[in-house]
Amino acid sequence: MANRPAGKKSVLPMPKFYKRERHFRLHLVAGFLIPVVRLMFGLRVTGLEKLPKSGPYVLVSNHVTNVDALAVAYLVYVKLKRAPHFLAKEGLFRIPVIGRILLVAGQIPVYRTSGQRNDEPLKVAHDYLERGHMITIFPEGTLTRDPNMWPMRGKTGAVRLALDTNVPVYPIAHWGSHEILPRYGSKFRPGFWKRVDMLVGDPINLDKFRHPQITPQEVTEATVVVMRHITGLVEQLRGEKAPETLWDPAVAGQSITGNFLKKKK
Image (cartoon, rainbow, N blue to C red):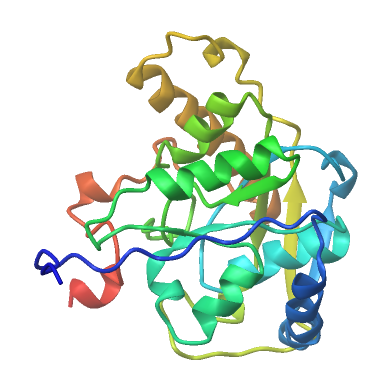
């Protein structure tokens, strides 16, 4: 057997496709998680009617705490009656049992630190969209590093996926999940009486970027447009004005992945 290069982890399996978007195995996973989520918090959604209940699109959201994925998944499965497909960090898929459940539920692992390329995960995401499914992405790529938990600069993956497949991008924003689990905190404080508010925005107009010769600079500009739309929704939820400039971890000298709060101590 050939030796694996130092620091390079094994390739992860990808989720299987099912003829029905909401298949039996997904129902089993959801049947366990839905009561748990309802005990953790209550989700209050405004603008749900803006999200299509069929057809492909990319759903983008801000990312404050690790509870966010549960809130968005609940929105997609319970409110929209659709199957949630997240592009999620590979570490979750390497946890015994948890990783298997994520794959069964149709989640897609994304390599970040293992040395593997993301060609296969992106191909799976493309295939899901081509089959009429939706893909959910947190464009920031990790929990926001902004000191006041505003959306920070985004990575270009969500925009590239939407432009490559010519599907629309719908923004949503949420606020309140940090009251259940602080950002990178361990004090888990669930309660069915606690509220996570979610606001759905109109589809983001990216028509000026939908042409065959798009440049890396244009992809970056389109990503800023997406993050500005998300930030505007967060402003409405918080009743406050966000900073004019999106927070950039690189400029602030922060780590791009992992618990930046722990690392700076």
